[in-house]
Structures are given as C-alpha cells and as structure tokens.
Image (cartoon, rainbow, N blue to C red):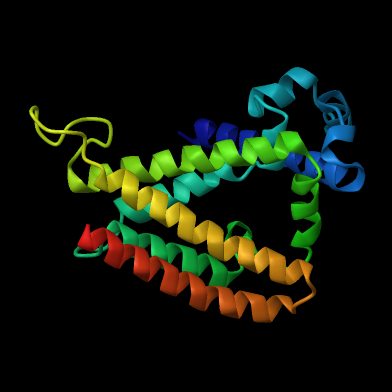
Amino acid sequence: METLGLRERKKRQTRSLISDVASGLFMQRGFDNVTVAEVAEAAGVSTKTVFNYFPRKEDLFLDRYPEAVELVTQAVRERAEGESPLAALRRLFLGMLREGHPLGGIAPGYEVFWQVILDSPALRARARELVEEFEGVLAGLFAEAAGSDPAGPVDPAGPADPAPRLAAALVVAAYRAVYVTSIDRIRAGDPVHDVIADRMVLLDRALLAVERAVAAF
C-alpha cells in the first residue's frame, strides 16, 4: 500500500509539474505559439510522457477538469442525509468561492488565464466540450441520486426521465451566466473583491432558483 501511495504521489507531482510549466509558457507566448515538444523540454520530460498525462494539448491548460468532476461527485454522493443534490452543489460552489479555491474561477490575476483562452480557437472549442461533458456528469449524478437512468426510460413503457438532464442543464446555465458576468466586470476594471462578493450573492440566488424550478418540474 505504501509503495502504491508513493507512486501515486509521484505521478501527481509529475502531472502538476508539466501543467504548471505549460501554463507558464502559454501565458507568456500564447497557447497556439507553444508546441507540446517545447513544453516537454521545459519540464524535463519526454513528449510521450506529456501525452501520457494529457492526451490533448488543450488539457495542459484546462488541467483542473478532472478535479472539478471529483469534487462535484464527492459533494453529491457524500451529501448529508436529507440534503438534495442541488443543495449539496450550491454548498460546494459557494464554499469554493469563499475559500478562494482555484476552481472557484475568480481571483486576482485570472485575467491572463481568460485572455489565453479567448485568444485560442482550440482552447475555446475544448472549453465548450468540457462544459458539455460536465453537464453529462451532473445528469448522471442526479439520476443516480434519484435512482433513475438519464439515458433510459422511467418505466419500460415510458419515455426517458428528463429531470436529471434538465437539472444539469439549468445548473450549468446558471453557473455560466454568473461566471461570465463576473469575468466581464473584472475585465472592465471592477475590484476583484467586490466582484467575488456580488458573485456569491448572485450564484446563491441563481442556484436556489434552479432548485425551485426543478422541484416544480
């Protein structure tokens, strides 16, 4: 068990090193102006090693997606008795903002990160793909919590249960709307701390509205 633990820690350290080096290069020179071979050389690893950890170049920069999936999965599956999946997610998202977690999405200096994405069609396309994948993950978690199958029928004679997919789509739409508003304000020069405070209020209201909408549905 100890050997496996050490191996896993080393793998995570290597992954983090490669991603950190890549992000630094992308923010200095632009995503499309840096090759995977250059990332590998700067990180002191082979190109093959880079692709072992990151099958796509875009994932070098959008490297926290697996962590996001892990966090929402844990929040829903390990929620308190009587707590709904949507309430668990609202608690998670607001907690991440409050604690300044990197996946909270708003912090001083994030303007450079956003600009790298905006400047690269490949990164923008991959970000859209990940949002769609994330929505699918949420739908699966909501279906699991409800004991249904988002891809299958509620009963053999009926249609597929749309509630998990609807809930997932609404969560993603609400989160994205608040997030984009926050980005626009920071890019316009509003103080980051003010934006974060307002975002917490808006996100709380938006996700509460999603809970009410899903409950009514």
